[in-house]
Image (cartoon, rainbow, N blue to C red; front, side, top):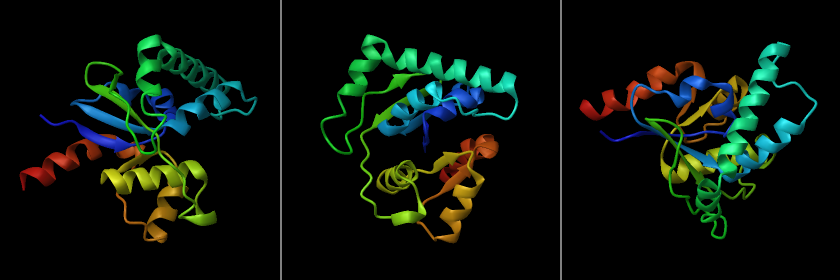
Length: 172
């Protein structure tokens, strides 16, 4: 069975534990800049979640994810893609059915001021790889739709549906 692929940010793995235990194989294509962003989020005094206990939990999960990426083998895999634009790392396992592939995406400002650099990298990665974006940013989803950007995007709340969607499309 082929694994389902999504472009997403590394922080989604920390916030949404269900992404790490999918019901079938999944590969997350993650721009390298979103891994760097984990350090900023971990060290920031700004809360990521509205409820203090949730915020502490997510920051702890971000710390665990950083530590996992810093393990020598994973660090070596990530470094392999950093010298060439758009190169991908070898897969980094995140559980029985989930894996991350880091991509050295490049923000070429093709979407101007409408999207921040990380959003632009998500869009460009999605277009290049022809795979959907998975995000929890409803406002980003609306800007993608309103802007007519030629990518598929799923709200993280629709993760289970998104996992099934590809199966349905392939079988019909």
